[in-house]
Length: 366
View (cartoon, rainbow, N blue to C red):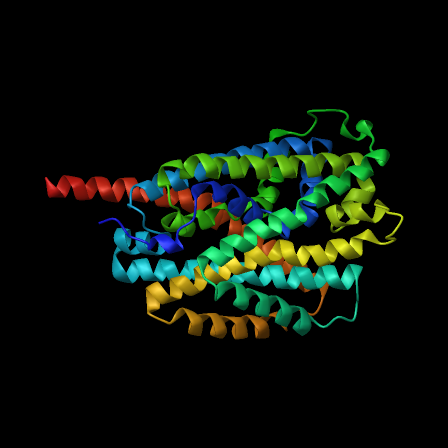
C-alpha cells in the first residue's frame, strides 16, 4: 500500500537539488582538504572525484531501494523488511546516528568561533543559540525546513565567489607531478572525503514528501554533481594557495583562505565568514532534528514536539562535555567512520537485503 502524504506538506522534486546540496555542505568543507592531502598530496583533487563518483552510485542505490516501497521512508522500510522488533531496533540505531551527527555541528561551530572570533566564548552559549534556531525551524514543519535550506543557499553561495580573490596567490606548480599518488593513497583520500559528502542519505526521509517521485533520481544526481563541483573547486583553490607544509599544518584550510580576502570597508572578512557558517549549519541541524523527532514519533509513538524539546535538552548537556579542540577532533574523527558506514555502506547492504527478502516473499506467495 502506497503511503499518502497530505499535499500541503509536499514540495517540488526540483528543490532536492538545493536541499541535498545544503545538507552536504557543512562542517566537512572547512577541513577536508588537509585530510585528503595527507594521503594523496597534489593528486588530492583526483580523490575528490573518486569519492564523488561513489556518491553518485550510492544515491542511485538509495533511489532504487525507495522505489520498491511505494513512497515509504527508511523507518517504515525497516519495519516492512525486518519486522517490528528488529526494524524498530534499526530505527533506534539510525536515530542515534543522526543525533550524534547533530552534535558534530554544534561542537565544531564552537571550535570555529573560539579560533576566529572569541576564545572565551562558552560552548553553552553556542549550543543554546543553535538549538533555539533549530527548534524554531522544526516546529514549522518540513516545508519550513526546506525553505531554510533554500534561503541559506541564496544567502551563502556568494562566499565561493569571494574565494576567487585568493587566485592572485595561486601556483599551478603545486599540482606537479600529476598522478604520483598510488591507488591505495587515492582510496584513502577518498575515504577521508566521505564525511564531507554525507547528507544525501537523508533522501531516505525526504522522499515521501516529494511531489513528483518520477524525477527524484534526476534531481538527486544533479545535487550530488553540484556538490562535487563545489568540493573540486575548493580543493583546487586550496592546493594552489597553500604550500605542502602549510596545508598539512592548517586545521581548517578553507576557512583560513578567507584571511587573505580584503575589502576596503572590511579588514577581517573571516569574521563575516564565521557568522555565515551559522546559516550554513542551520538547515543541516534542522533537517536532522526533524528526521530524528519524526522517527521517534513513528517508532515509539512519542509526540514530535515532546521529542524535539527533550532531545534538545539532552544534546545541550552532552555538548558541555566538549571543552578542548582535541576532544572535538577525536569525536569528529570517530564520527567520520560512523558516517562512512551509514552513508556509503549501509545503503548498499539495505538494497541487497531488499532484493533478497522481496524475492523470497514472492516465491513463497506463489
